[in-house]
Length: 108
Length: 114
Image (cartoon, rainbow over all chains, first blue to last red):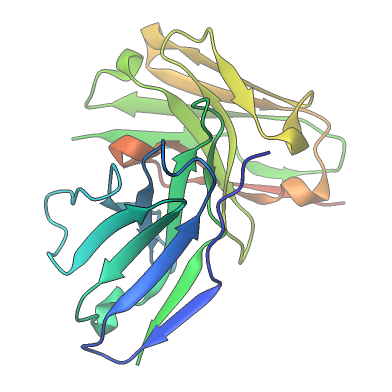
């Protein structure tokens, strides 16, 4: 079955740049989506189609893909960005869609 | 306003069954793939099953194949998940979702325990 691999945790100080990676064999062909989940809340989209930002998402959030690795970058991370982040994509045939294991971002 | 409202969760013994429902409003339900996503306590997100717009394509994670059935009724703007032969490891919060569209319900909790 298809898998997306994320680091379990990333830690930065406020104002630093946080980078969260997601590795998957089909990422050169299939876009990654990124979700933020704060404690007790449903996930919410922060990046779609690899690098697009939904309305209302701060400009400090950006996405990119290089080869089999998609990256969520938070430039100038803030304390309120502390959350779990998940990548989401499909295998090369278009199904199944899967989530990565999630990355806990700590900003302190 | 987009709304997805799940129901049907609860406490069930191992081997038992539950049927989850999700009622949608505020958008054209029949135009979207839908997914049941679950999250076990303290764990990550897992796609359990998804279904295409007219119900002709369905996909399941290996751990639920043969036990869970996803379905939809576009006339009722509703999505369903029939869960049979439930196991302790199926305990989770179950979300009805179209993740790429950022449509999520609030989740319904399924607890499998004796």
